[in-house]
Length: 172
Image 1 (cartoon, one colour):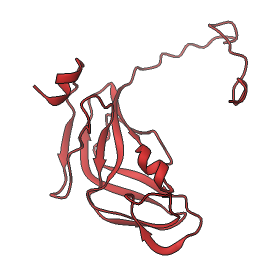
Image 2 (image 1 turned 180 degrees about the vertical axis):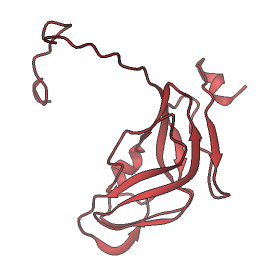
Image 3 (image 1 turned 45 degrees about the vertical axis):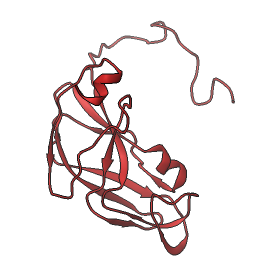
């Protein structure tokens, strides 16, 4: 019995994974009830202010058809650093077989020459060094239904129209 099976009854979907090197680390659930698996960095990388880079994981996946893997930020990194995953959630399609690389952007506009790590607290601005073995993001397996589009004259009378968007429901 796997640890996750002890706590909740859920469907497990087999996803094949290739570890590209000895430095690649298998993603894992931190807790049995988590929806996302932590993904680890396979190479050290420096990210300067206003720079966007691809962070290597050393992982390749064979995702079953009808599913995708979504790449999402880790909340601690988003809270404690200026590092962002700008295309979040990122989509890894079932037909993609190359290395999973994470797009990371350092949103610091300025900063000192001091080098920070994602383990530092206080949302320090400047240069960041991502260390090999750091948890960089989470991945979530999601089922992807296909859309069957139907052309209609107007969508106004179908379902409920909430009458607006982009702040239309008010503040707070």
